[in-house]
Image (cartoon, rainbow, N blue to C red; front, side, top):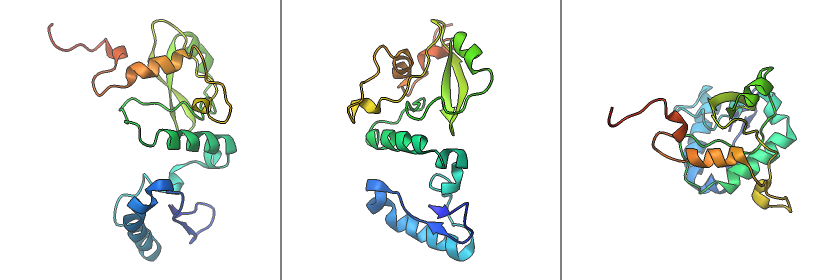
Length: 169
């Protein structure tokens, strides 16, 4: 929702999926204030369409994969270290290959693969999105990166934080 980056004065309030009934009243109120006063009263960054760079919004693959995964995980528990499997390896810096060979486990932020932490057992490359087996897609087998993410699904310190210890010294 919010003002379209391409057209001044053109506001969007769409794409809420099943959350539309839940968010409709509050978002509608804030969108009205946005239109009338030039900004919403509440912090609406999480809903603002301008938070996505045009390199993502103009990319059909990114939209298709990320939308699917968002919908598939809609009712999943959201863990602090959860990383998406969809729309990966779209934007990489020149050091990506070298870091991967050194065991870097990447995190994704706005399409960019960025170093997250290092796996002492070495490379865990990100595979192409498998749509969790939907649409006649084969599920990625022996997916080391996904296995490492599964260990991250905790509200405690993830296992790769073994440098920082707590408890008995």
